[in-house]
Image (cartoon, rainbow, N blue to C red; front, side, top):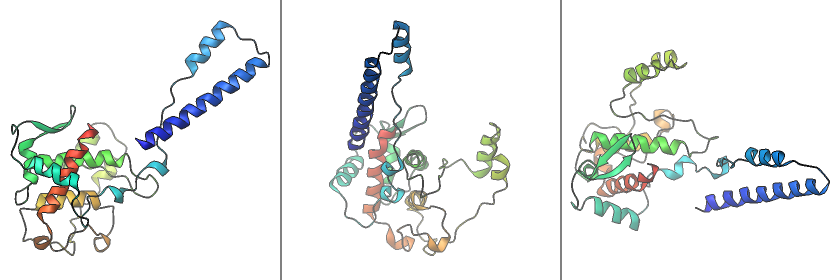
Length: 239
């Protein structure tokens, strides 16, 4: 809200300056017909406000905090989600004409339960929205696909639109990372691992990539699930 206020004040100030200059030109004796005045009004359209790079948050500031204590907001939101209240098919997250995620699916973010695939899809939409707000100078832009959008399906999709990068994308070899912390001993938290990997990976090599997890079987706690549940529900405003 503060950013919108600052930008709005700057826009209003520019309009005042422009009006003042217009009045000065009138004082200098420039004759204008009613048609000229009307044409000038039509030319002056509402300025489109685009946030500058300085006002775009660096991506690292939007990651789910892993070290800090749970905030009051995170506690209250996660308690509400995991309380068992409400009709299970009521929608808690929705992007019009794109995705609807009901309570019963979001409840799988509860500790000890495998995360539903549609929650992963919801997370992809949230991260794609955040890509639009990241610092444009410091990071690569990324596209997050839904769980069923494997490489072949994605290539087929962009080919239908004759995208110029279709051949380049088709030639890319999919690489499976062997992260230092990767173990095959914790299957129930695979959805949480996926969500964390999606938001933290920025193109680094395996050894340089720090996602905040240690050994899989030892590092996921109930607090981690509550953090992700809280962020999903707070980001429902992207709809």
